[in-house]
Amino acid sequence: MSPFRIKKNRSLPVRVVTFDSELEFNLGYRETGQELFDLVCRTIGLRESWYFGLQYVDGRGHVAWLKMDKKVKDQRIQFQTNGFYVFNFYAKYFPENVSEELIQEITQHLFFLQVKQSILSMDIYCRPEASVLLASYAVHVQYGPYDYETYKDGMLASADLLPKKVTDQYQMTPEMWEERIKTWYMDHEPMTRDEVEMEYLKIAQDLDMYGVNYFPITNKNKTKLWLGVTAIGLNIYEENNKLSPRTTFQWNEIRHVSFDDKKFTIRLVDTKVSNFIFYSQDLHINKMILDLCKGNHDLYMRRRKPDTMEIQQMKAQAKEEKQRRQQERAKFLREKKLREKAERDRYELQKRYEHLQEEMRMANDALRRSEETKELYFEKSRVNEEQMQLTECKAHHFKTEMDRLRERQMKIEHEKIDLEKKIRDADFYVHQLTLEKDKREAEAEKLKKELQCAQLAEREATARLLNFINQGRKTSTDSLMAVSGNNVVVVSATNTAISTPSLTNSSSTIDIETAGGVDLTASNHDLASNANDASSDITDDFETKEFVLTDDKLEQITNIRLEYLKKSKQMENQLQTLRSQIELLKIEENQSNLDILSDALMKAGETKYSTLKKLKSGSTKARVAFFEEL
Image (cartoon, rainbow, N blue to C red):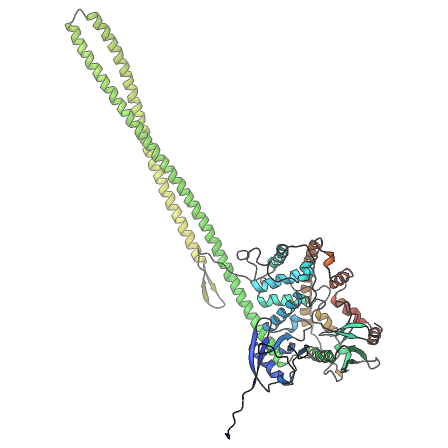
């Protein structure tokens, strides 16, 4: 036996699935969940990793989250038939306000993909009119800003943009849905992809089921309820209503969380209030609830403390990157305007050139007609000359004949009478011929003068045509020189000359930016501002801290809030218009329980934030007693 043993390099084949990619690794046999998670984050370039986790299916078919402190091989992960241990990279925790907390583009992109999939699969309930609005943003992300030249009718009809339950509720064809999505799509202002995704998330975070993890529980009366774990606290829902909670407890009201088998106990900060106790169906559910409670509580506390150096650095980098993109976008818009101006000038020159060509064609036609008239006059003059020559020949013949007759008269006396008669007849005929000759000569003179006039008119027409062509060439040359001069723009900020080609077809793509998300009555920021003291650990007492806002910062926040509310009001009116348009096509039999509940809440004027505000208005003791009596 050899004294040297070769140690086998044992590894675990791992496949990590995200919403836009699949990653495969050969993980070390002794690697922990944290090492696998860090490897995935480094691969996709994610730094805001505290929102995410790795989800898998265990040997009993239960969905679980990978524990970071334990080895991967020790967590009873179900081995797939394809030879890999499969994990799903999902958002485990949700921010209270996406616009203030999400920093990296990759972070908001992953949230966008997950929230969009949840809405399409109806894991997050969304009203039909809001689904159309969100679908228009999804189209903007996929295809870029609306461009009438590249957009083709029917390109959205086959896309998976709306939840199936929404399309089943109305007697509308895919083309009708596409027309309504296209209407919103056309109204979006120029925006980049990350800005569109942020607008999508701003609207989605106002949905009732956004960021809520539901677990079936019972109270001491064995009443079946739903426990909702959120970024702000714990919500209690009735069995048939996941939209409107019956009571809620924020994390700053909770001091300790623990469970014993299926019994889950929550100790509140107010020591005078009895413990908040509920029961779950499985020990596995209790473990997931405890894990989510701890993670959400830690993030709740982190939001209410000053940012760490890492977060400050990330925000500074994100701000610089945003400013750089804005500068590039402004430069692009300037160049686009210059190109559009050059295109307009080129179009105007083209139209003028065509007009000049038309005038030249008309002048050529006039010249051709003049030449034809001249040739006609030449032909008439030639005919008149021939007739005049013929008349002269006839006159000469008759004169000769008259002379012969006169000589014969002298010789033949006895024919004198006859000859005299003939002479008189001949004289008369000669007289008529002479008159005809004079008439022909006058006509010939007249035709000669008309010919001279025609030649003079021809020369004048030729001179006018040459003068017109020279003037057209001079005008076209001056316009081209003016366009060429305007196509050079000097950017003083960079001392760089930008030359835009003229007389060429160019097309460009612009981004389209839209108003802020839908906020029916309040934003998540209102919930955060109502939060009081919070604990630093799930099992420790809460530490109280005070934060003071300066007048400038408060004024800035107020202005942003007013602008956001103005945009939200406008979008709410548009949603109301769309709702009224499709209401007549609704199929009442296809409505789900969530649709009925949502309609009732809308008619009552209740929203996600108004409901939570009402529930928080009561004392903790009253809310615990209310839960126990459900």
